[in-house]
Image (tube, rainbow, N blue to C red; front, side):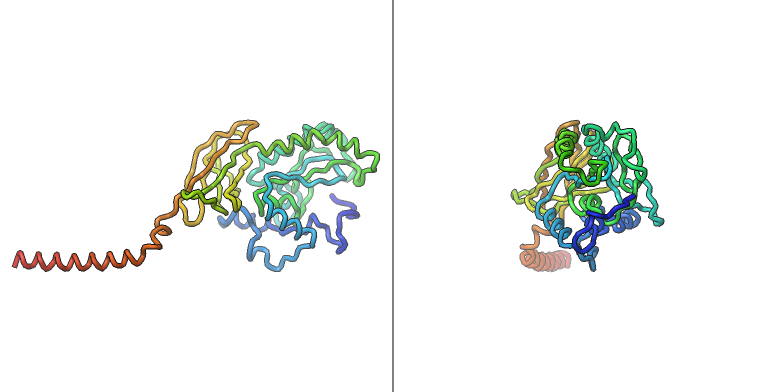
Amino acid sequence: MVIDAYGRENLHSVDLNRNFPRLNTIMYRNEIIGGKNHHLGYGEDMTNYVPEPEVQAYIEWVEEYPFVLSANMHDGDLVANYPFDDVRSFNGRPSYTMSPDDSLFRHLARTYSRSHATMSTRTRACSIYSRTFEDGITNGASWYTVKGGIQDYDYLHTNCFDITLELDCIKFSSESGLEKEWIDNKDALIQYMYQIHMGVKGIIASTDDMPIKGAVVHVGGPGINHDVTSTKDGEYWRLLLPGTYTITVSAEGYFSKGFVVEVVENSVTPLNFVLSREAWVELEAITVHNKMSRASLDHFIWILVVCTWSIYS
């Protein structure tokens, strides 16, 4: 539980890590009705939502510069916390709340905790208000519920995978302790950043070599109910654990295409897609010609009927 809000709020007395759009409710509803599973919060979903200036600046930043992987850092405990932060249950009580990429997020969190000097081996809680965490990791909602947090927002609104790092039992470390904190976290930070080199990545383009923006990349076999999309330059990336997957790409106005791909450990698999335009798009420019052709065909059929009548009359 959070017992001291000092240092968490901005000038408006708003906790910025509770001020992001609350997209989990939309996601949980869509899981039931079969709605969208990615890039939530655009258009009507964010009606009446007014973010704090700092949060608005962050939202604009991550939308303009797409990221692969991130971590937001806190103090006050020592644990790697992964999505979801917001529970599915109506009572709001802490309970393990898996994301579609739960196995991947646990891998990312363990990568950090096991590379940290003490995070995964600590046997005592930071305080009487906290607890110990097996392997130094926790699902956010199983610890305590956060609505409007940054890590769930990044996952549900962008292509970025984000976890929360609690880096010190002391809420506000002294200047004299910063060097030790750097030494304790240095290897973990490097190993965590290296995780961008896993899964698949590539370019999605049309047959005339033009990048396709907003193409949807879906992972099947085994299926993961969380899609990603291509950037304005046609780039895409999808973090995945080792295994065999079917990667399918679809875009409005194009035929979909899929490949079976083997993802291996400690390596990213390049996989590019070239999509062909659907027939109705290419035929749009010759509609008038088609109408003329139909008129000519009707005229030909009429002549054929007259000739046939003449022969048999």
